Image (cartoon, rainbow, N blue to C red; front, side):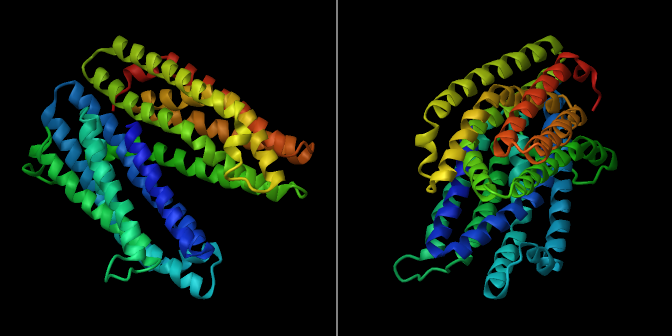
Amino acid sequence: MLLVMFFNFFVGLTDVYVAGFLGPEIQAIVGFVSQLYFFIIIVANAISIGTVALLSRAVGAGKYDEALSVARQSLLFGIACALALTGVCLILQDQIISLAGFTGKVRQIAVDFFVIFAFSLAPNYIVLLANAIFRASGEVKLSLLAMFFTSLINIALNFLLVFGLFSFQGLGYRGIALATASAMSAGMIICLILFRWSRWKNIFSGAWRVSADLVHRIFLLSWPAALIQISWNAGNVALYNLLSRLQEGSITAMAALTNGLRIEAVLYLPAFALNMAASVLIGQNLGAGAIERAEKIGWKISLSGAAVVSIMALPVFIWAADLSAPVAKDQRVLAETIQYLRITMWSEPFMAISVILAGCLMGAGDTKGVMFVIVSALWIIRLPLAYFLAVVIGYGAFAVWLSMVLSMFFQGLAMTIRFRNGHWKTMKI
């Protein structure tokens, strides 16, 4: 799972790198449309969480027919959502792109990007849900294989379609969007082929009828996960808005936050990889009736994950200046980025525990509990505390970074208490 996340990371990095050769306008468009696309993909990610919870429990209980039915319904539900969202995107393309304030030729380029991305939505949903199905049955090597080739195709096509080769002149900026669309279409075909090589080979032979009850169960598990991702992204936007109110030093603080999050993202990779692994293991053990083993696995993964992330955070704390220098050219931005990293590194163990235990709880079906903890930490602690300390009292960016640490400490503690109380052990999903 860690390798899968690295592949996704490098695809995003390649998009930005290639766009840099085409000018700052293209780079800005790629960044904006990527954020829009992420919001649209939230639905697929949420459905995949509900799918993993139901499938892993059915697999653990040895209920193969039920697992096949869940897999089919998840794919049907995901495809229906993708087609509906594609229609919305194509109809409202101009209104959606206007949110960025692009004008003239730049606006048209953004529309072109967005339309191509919209047509790749259905294949992308199938790839995400197919990988969730592979994970839920413990066939993570198939997920790795699918994402390796999908990412490789995406990266290769980025260069080929943008710059061309031999007599092929290249398509310019459109090549970036077409590379993603083509890679996702290829990834969809790869996943469908891999179904034939796995325990899911009979997924196509059964009846593809919509079960309202099963779709309802998937929806009940999925909507809190979608709300978490929407809330988290909205919270990041609110942080930037808050920093803009600092007047003197606001631009410096916002640049430091951008740089710091980019560097800090490396520490999130192992935490989220363990989050997905823990989700499957908890679900399978609950399905098998091994409740005590499920709890032990949860504690072992979360504590070992916290240890690994802490070890990774130590060199970031020590060499914050060296790590910040390549991305922070301005001296004031560099100093603020260093301060950001040296403050936020104290929260990394709590981040790891929170993320991994959230995976455990979601694997057990307690998606509402995870939603309550994360939304509370963000909107009741982090943002109000940051506003009070930074804007009202006037402690500036330092107070914002400190508020982020304190809210993550609360989130880790609350997630630990939620897992410890054991309500997830008896949940019916």
